[in-house]
Length: 295
Image 1: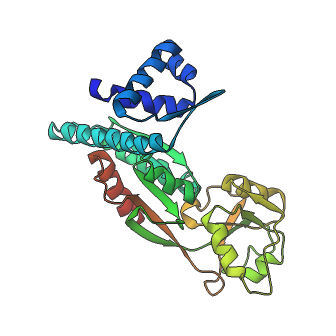
Image 2 (image 1 turned 60 degrees about the vertical axis):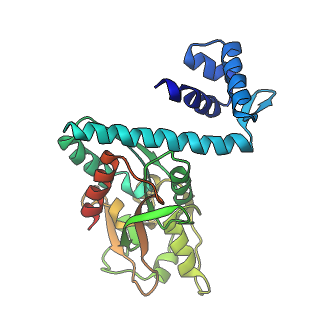
């Protein structure tokens, strides 16, 4: 739409970090694009970019403008989806920031189920840690966040909250594989793997060991749960994950066992949106579907 073109131009330059790179993507000359930006700044009454030796970046006024641009584009998408819904033809685009645990099983299954009924709805999924997921919501980069143990919750409006206990993943021939429930002290006395500090499971492990006589002393710290699951096959080590990311018998080399709830608290898996925002139709319906699926 023509009235949105200047705003989209500003957004694309900000994303590229360079007028030259953005101009190439728009099939314009750098000088033509720079003149358009200068004309916008003149009408706006403020400069919005800092000119750097190797590119540009938004200044504080530009950051505020970018929040407005993201909100405008998001509202336009919401209206488009509502109009499409009036005609009975469900269209739309759903953007999600989610924890790694949702990636291997839950989210692919639910997206495919939704698209069987609404094949013209598309998805964009970003795997994020808990702080990044909340940031994506606040900047309108995504519509929904599905995150384990969020950090801030300032702009986070909870749609659904589900408890997730921490489980232990190990090789089928691990000495502790025969135990129905594991004590955290016994796990940490053996080689173990933990997620890096930005993840909710690590947060719960840190809380569980605070002030105790035992502590985390991992042989491996990683930001990939898939890497951790695979590593335990090659060494008799233990890793930790929440159940939604684990499928029984998905890998016959692995088994999972719950940790004793006396040793470590369960965490919360939350589906959320930007506080006070009205979601596009397709996104709102998908949010209800995954909330029901978690129930």
